[in-house]
Image (cartoon, rainbow, N blue to C red):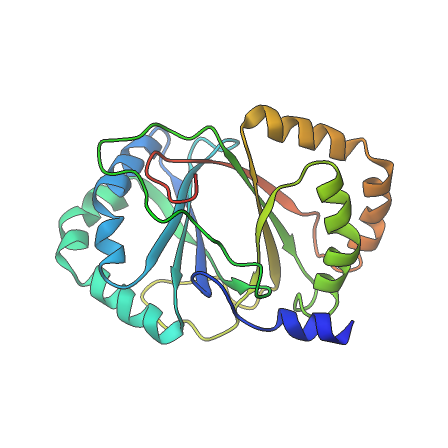
Length: 251
């Protein structure tokens, strides 16, 4: 067990420093922001040295936009964000983007839980003006924890929760935990002082995700784990169903 916990403290994989960003938008403005984002804010950010991993509509909140971007380390994060937010593309389009938003400060700084737990996205996204929305549903389950994930929760998850989830059809693609480094770009706030673990899963479509959720909710073995889970968590886990935009790398 010690080896497993120690392994989880390593930082591996694609974009070992990752931001999970959730924006609250003015009613009816989400498609406007997505059009700006997919047209102007993908290549322009990546040209500054970061990866835009995925951007999504939250299917249960019509005024939420969720996206992920990654960096090789915290110093690279500072350089990339300074280059973008001081650059011409953001300067040109920031007023239009900001006008769609009520709040953009719900940001978690994360790193993969283990060597195998980072994202492995496709090599290329659809070009501008091409492609169709993917039918896939990405599920993001956030566990808000009483202590760092490495202090028991990860072992509990791998030993007890993950086998049950896989047995009823979970398609886990990544597992991230809180990154507690100081914010290296203070112009953009992040949520600090929290311990979370976030599990990302991919389902072929909404029907597949619905079948999984139904099977899990009626599984006696899964229900029996919930009291044990509460020993590690502050609140019940939150679940987001995310639909990728046309140009999302995760799709």
